[in-house]
Amino acid sequence: MSRFEKTQLNKLTPYRLSSHKAWSAGGNTLKLDWNESTKSLSDNVKQALVEEITNGNLNWYPNVDNNELRQAIAQYSNVDDSNVQYFASSDALHEYIALAFVENSDRILIIGPTYDNFRAVVAAAGANAIFYNSSDDNLQIDIAQLNIDLQLINPKVVYLVNPNNPTGHQYSKEAIELLLSSHPNILFIVDEAYFEFSGYTSSTLVSLFDNLIVSRTFSKALGLASFRIGYCLAHENIISSLNKVRNAKNVSHLAQVAALAVLKDLYPINEYVNEVVKQRESFIEFLQQFSRYSPLPSMANFVFVKMNSPVNELTSFLENKNIFIRDYSHLDITKDYVRFTIGNAQVMNSVKAAILKFENG
Image (cartoon, rainbow, N blue to C red; front, top):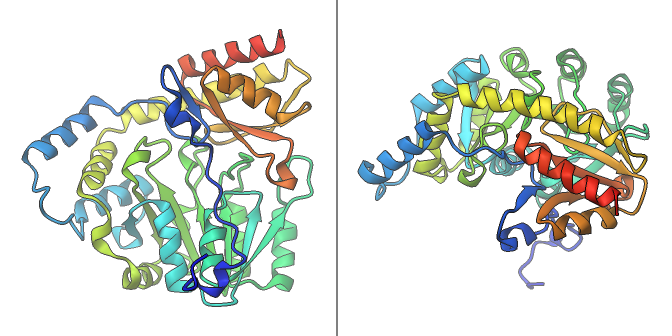
């Protein structure tokens, strides 16, 4: 520990990364631990990148106010472009939210179990991150009860992932609107990293409520995880505050090119999303054949599975087959769970075949 380290880092638990084994596995590897797309970029997107690498001004800093990209995001999200800003990933957006809105000792409520990056970011900023976890067998939150409890907890910010990662649960637009209207002095961060797979969104609420930030990414359905680009949808006042702390040149030029190209070529994306939804339901049915697995319903591109046998038996077996899934046994609330990213039919057929071998000894 450095003697220059901030005081609040002394007790900080870092965001826990998935295993790095997939990068060194080699061969025919199925990386199903970070919910990335299993589909390659379309030829149109690749061509746009090749043309930019060949002819673009890569010696310049990136475009710091890409109106064309913001307008494309706005059209995709059914909002006005004044309600849009893009960032170098939704994780970077989390950091800017902390810079703009979170002060030392603020109470930040995390609806859990969920994606842990926002907790780590606000804790590093000196905030008091509090988990609101479900005691439900399916790990689902009762929104009506949460609405009541918020009066007592009185946080400055609430972070809610929708559909939730890792459980896959979806909260309705009406439920989100209830929270927003009932608690106008609380800032709600609704992380919609997986909304494409559910079809549900709170995006149209951003022009009506100035206490909502919808966080999104190009890393999941849109397949640009390695480019690190995301965006937010929010009221103009929120966008203005974020722009005060946002470093506009931190979104790489090629990430902007790729994002714009994807939004101009949505047909293969929509096809992929439809296939993942189909494979998700098929995989849940497949697992239900065996007493060892209790999969939760999911509205995302993953399935959270309660194991009725030691988690490491399955994960070790699959790793030996170069199939990497997410082990959640490090948390008490999810100690018996694993998460499978859902991919296309070819990927899921390989996963099913490996599980059948595991079951047959």
